[in-house]
Image (cartoon, rainbow, N blue to C red; front, side):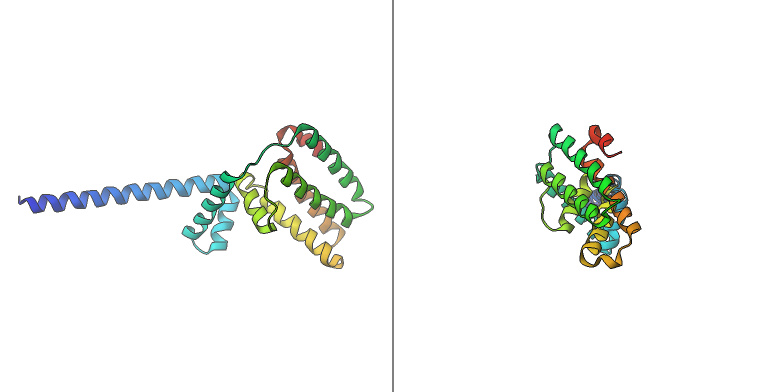
Amino acid sequence: MDAWVWIAIAVAAVIVIVGVAYAFAQKRRHEELREQFGPEYDRAIGDAGDVRSGESELQARRERREQLNIRPLDPDAAKEYGRRWDETQRRFVDDPEGALADADGLIVGVMRDRGYPMDDFDQRSADISVDHPDVVEHYRSAHDISTRARDDGRQVSTEDMRQGLVHYRELFARLLGPDDRRATA
């Protein structure tokens, strides 16, 4: 065979190998993101409109999170937050709207103390989705209910506000940390 044929075969083989390696890398990235983000993966893909854009968004979230100095709460602060949460839950019976507003404030306080930036809500939920993808939807739902109650409480029933508090509790327990979940039971 002519040398040019061997060169063409070698080039074709390299192209195939590079293509296969790229496909495996994409599949691995896809699986890693799906595993890390769980249901948030599907939400991001749906919001973006396609897999490539959605995965790029999730990767950007992950990279942003790596730059943040997220830290556990000081044990005394966690205990105080747990005490305040218990008060908020007890307050719900007499003042559901006030308790819901307090719960929102507690979430923001815990996030700030842990080192999450307090940019707008969408950025906070994106940041939380990296560490707590299984509860970020609770945060979005609670925030929506809280915002509606604050802006026009007549459109939010007491049951809606109760659900908002339950949603906040899911994230609150995660933010306090595994040793402090008993404080939210």
